[in-house]
Image 1 (cartoon, rainbow, N blue to C red):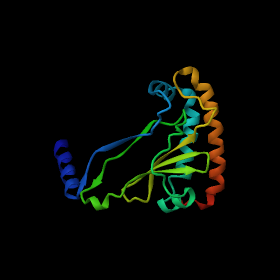
Image 2: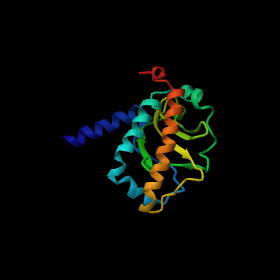
Image 3: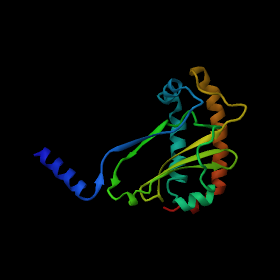
Image 4: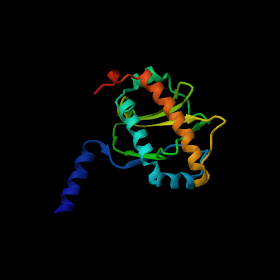
Length: 184
């Protein structure tokens, strides 16, 4: 019985002109070694920072539409600049729905990169409508105090560096995006 329901659901979805699947999008981190980032991500000591980082994205960026994001951050950059560093507590990628329209003209999803003043960068992944943000991540602009993650001994100096830069980005965001300006 369960098999028949699954086949019926699949048939209805195909009939509706959609395709199924999921898409994994990696957030670039070329300055850090993969094994060091993976170990840091699984370390519970970074959980509070990760949660705060995600909350910032969910409250300040995700509610915005494409035109609002362009108005705040300016025109998208052609690519992520080479001096971008993914924070140690940020996830290294995101999984999004692979649900697509059969009519390709309705698939207006895109990924854009923006400068966050002189402090860093923002990557936004937009939904199929091309207007709504579905995921985002901040990067910090590398300077002379930057410590790449190569081993566990790099965690403490890198965390301090990331937290200082994230504080600066939060201050800038609070001025650029007042809470009252965010649609609910």
